[in-house]
Length: 264
Ligand code: ATP
Image: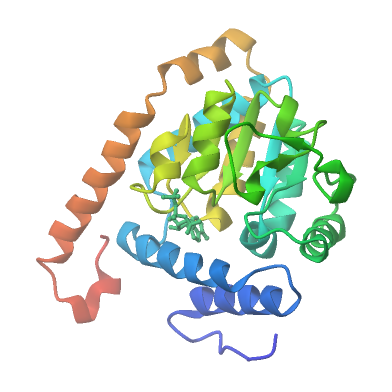
């Protein structure tokens, strides 16, 4: 890393994450707009206390069950996800038997290749959606996000879409696919349009979904179906907002200079 961050820095992890993104930006994996999107995510992460909150864990469990039940699950990867969670994506794909596909709003051949390289270096045997492989299109979608692999997202029944834009989530849902969104902003269009929304940082969410998948793997199909059927995304998003309101209410009563000493 170009800038050495002292381990003792109170915001060490957050600063390391920024360094990872800047490095990925210099390698052509992340676009400048991705850095801005990260800033928005950081803000919401502060609001939830930079940890996996109970409604996010509930969503992660339902996501794991949906991925295990899927006939053709696909994990869609963009620049920020590759920069922050490439190894975790590969691990999750192994646990649930999913394919991995590059899908970008700001698409260029060089960027597709750079992201595929990061994924392969992290252990991915196959990366879909690169070059001519992204030859199919999602109907009614006009951004570069519409280009997908005919062996991947086009034929998938469940698509995990971390850090997605709302339009594509909506288009995938219209095609009858179940989408699992990871987004720190519970109010984004993606968060509201998805079938299952995990309001958590991709850095925590992807390994957490993998942990749940490992625990659920041995269960009978009916049990997994019950978890997915009983899951209510609207209620869970409401729980996230209530959690944030409650936390802010608690924080407003304490000495903010000593915030770390309190369990809020
Ligand atoms: P929409 O079209 O869904 O309303 P948007 O315009 O906010 O979304 P983008 O600009 O693509 O979409 O932003 C990406 C989203 O990713 C933001 O909502 C941001 O909160 C979220 N985000 C950024 N970094 C992370 C991260 N590390 N983990 C989870 N979510 C993140």
